[in-house]
Length: 92
Image (cartoon, rainbow, N blue to C red; front, side):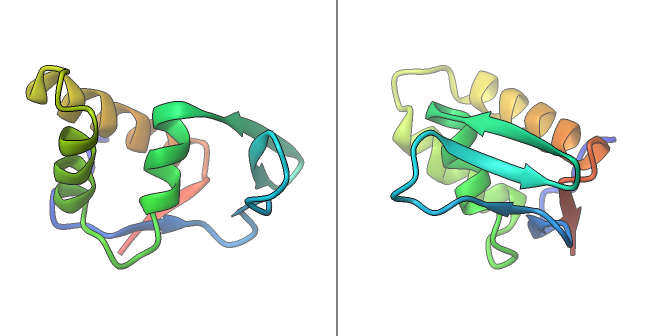
């Protein structure tokens, strides 16, 4: 499942990020947790239900300007699809 570019990803019910002051940053999900750092943390922090997939990709392409823009887009779409399959993200 490839997310639509105008969809607005948000954490699924029962999922949340631990507090910013707690290290390492962790995505807490029912009965499991996923340690986040670097780009994965940057992506999840942007999944707030207000940004579209397209906006997240654009922000990440600016943040990682040295990387190939198409590669950044593919990686983000793949990561969002994985989080959706793991029931950590919903799309509005």
